[in-house]
Amino acid sequence: MAIRSLPAARWPATRTVLMTALWAAACWPRIGTAQGAVPKEQIKAALVFNFLKFTEWPADTANAPLTLCVAGPDRKTEAAFAQVQGRMIENRTIQVRTVRGGDVAACHLLYIHDLGRDLLTHVVAGNPNLLTVGDQDDFTEAGGVIGLVEFQGRLQFKVNLDMLKRGNYKLSSQLLRLAVNMR
Image (cartoon, rainbow, N blue to C red; front, top):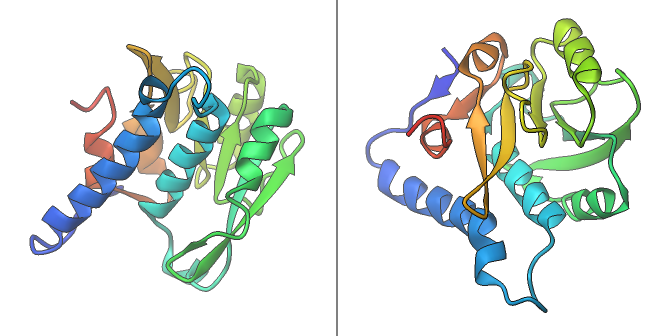
């Protein structure tokens, strides 16, 4: 199954850190002033970083960098994801790449920005182990794993459990509990 549990002793600390990080990323636009509000693109990049952070990847890739691919970015999205470049998760460097079309063989996570179902359908069919994240309204219904949605003025996320189970990665059960369709 694609859900990973933590030992009971680590649950309170992990839950606190996870809840705080995701709450801050999702609620920041509501908290910020008109002059100092964080752009949505940066919040999306922060959420995607946390999805990478709270995912257990296959053991055979433990020493390799994590490759975060971005498809169809505009300038603001590209700049936001560039801030994730070089960050570390459990001694693994994050490499950010912009991809065109279906060239996703080296990607661990693919963020699809504002593209249609055609790319998603093509990518999902040929890459079942790819963790896909997107910001289209019907992303999870179209076969994506994690869809970013705006709900009550905040960015939140939905999870497609059927697609999640096909991957060779495991999302933290604490992360799954934060999804709007898992509550």
